[in-house]
Amino acid sequence: MNNSQIATEFERLADLLEFQGANPFRIRAYRGGARVIRDSAEDIAVLARQDPGRLRQLDGIGKAVAEKCVDLVTTGEIPQLAELLQEIPASVLEILRVPGLGAKRAAMIYQHLGVDTLDALRLACESGQVRGLKGFGPKTEQTILDGLSLAAAAGQRIYWAQADELAAAIREHLSSCPSVTSLELAGSYRRGKETVGDLDILVVSESADEVMDRLAALAGCASVLLRGETKMSIRLDSGFQVDLRVVPAQSFGAALQYFTGSKEHNVAVRERARQRGLKVNEWGVFQVVDGQEDYLAGATEEEVYKALGLPCITPELRESREEFKWAEAGALPELVELCDIRGDLHMHTTATDGKASLEEMVSAARARGLEYIAITDHSKRVTMANGLDAARLRQQWSEIDRINRELRGEFTVLKGLECDILEKGGLDLPDDVLAEGDWVLASIHYGQKQSRAQITERLLEAVENPCIAAIAHPTGRLLNRRAPYELDVEALFQAVRAYGKILELNANPARLDLNDVYCAAAREQHIPIVINSDAHSVAGLDVMRYGVVQARRGGLTRNDVANARSWRELQEIVSPARDS
Ligand code: DGT
Ligand code: CA
Ligand code: CA
Ligand code: ZN
Image (cartoon, rainbow, N blue to C red; front, side, top):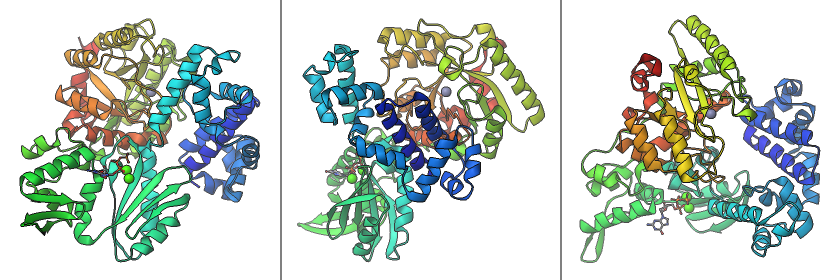
């Protein structure tokens, strides 16, 4: 079991206990434990097996969590969770996950209306039964319906980061088949799409049966949905689907091209082939003469595109947006890569809601080969996170001065802040304080339901403030959970451009905010993008690569990415207020 799987079990336990109305302290302990486990750099299963005593010494892991961890890794389940699942139908867990509902309300709806599935919940809302419950009203009912649509639209799509983890496990699992000579993952996963609907695997093998038998034996495979001679689909315990196709070597490139998609990209590819008297399908590129099809190409993607007079287009760009125009002009962008990233300009420490100290973040960033970071803890309005007031901020900043002196230029720590944009407009700390910093982000945490005009106005005011370098997670969306706030993106971009500011691409796999389309728009308008981890722990620094994938989908090159520059070069764009 990996850390993320263990954490998920504790989250389920916390959900069900909350549903039962159990002691809030216990619930919080399990949720906190889950977070620590998920973020931990150590392999919790190994610790639980070999050194349970040390497990308890981890910050945020108490006796109860430690004991249950041991149960879980030795027996495969948490006994208390198994018992709860006897009492409460598992389908209730789905209701708990409806955005905007929460465990307490879910419990009331279950107890009073007997609602235990998503369909039943929708019916109860639509027939106005829910508003009759104590503490509920028509507005709550609408919130639940909105949440249901969001959940339905999200369906079973998972974050790219989760798909990546699954893809690695499947690759590893199938690689032990001696008959497999090539293996590639195609589909939206290969295109780096922020969420993935199912995984598509392509394999070249002498024995399709061997590969299919092996896939059926994957840990977590719940059922085989379909099995043909060269084609198979399985469903995992999580409900997620995996498709497999076994193809001949001479068709591998053509099949990879076809099943990578997108559908829209492929429509354009086929049209292009038709204009040249060719035919493209998953088997290859063919010349059609008198109804006779001659195989021209198909072993590699390069030769498929070449047969159509095109350079090989990077999978991340295959959305039928600009890629054909660029390819024809020989102007495909050289997409940014993880190794281009030199700094990380958004992260938190124990001073607010981070799990690691300032020193720990600095040495972790150095170990990852970065040249500079900005410490950007929350400002005071974000009370949940114990946000910093001017005095605590200045104290942290003088600490940073001290660290920089010790580092003697081998690494740079910037005095930063994630300054809250207040609900009523304006920034959370006065300009004279902000002006002492090197790198101040502004972001919205509260008042996200305000009107488009209000939200836009708040953001524009922040952009215009000379102390602000960049806007963090500019649209506020959370994938599968929360839509972006109402916002005039065009006006925001215009202002950012006019004032020479920077926009963040937040690399957290649940945010990836800005999205790919906005990244492309920023590039077109010459607005620099900074890709930040927004790490709240040491392990949190590693999400940077998800941001890079999203940036590539937006067509960004090294030149378009602010933190692909040295801090000295970047400073020229930032031009802090105190220089004027
Ligand atoms: P997903 O799984 O919803 O995240 O998105 P994709 O793009 O992975 O879609 P999927 O798994 O249905 O199919 C994989 C690729 O196969 C898709 O991107 C293009 C190709 N493909 C599948 N069905 C069709 C089709 O009916 N027409 C065309 N042109 N291409 C298809
Ligand atoms: Ca797919
Ligand atoms: Ca598929
Ligand atoms: Zn943050």
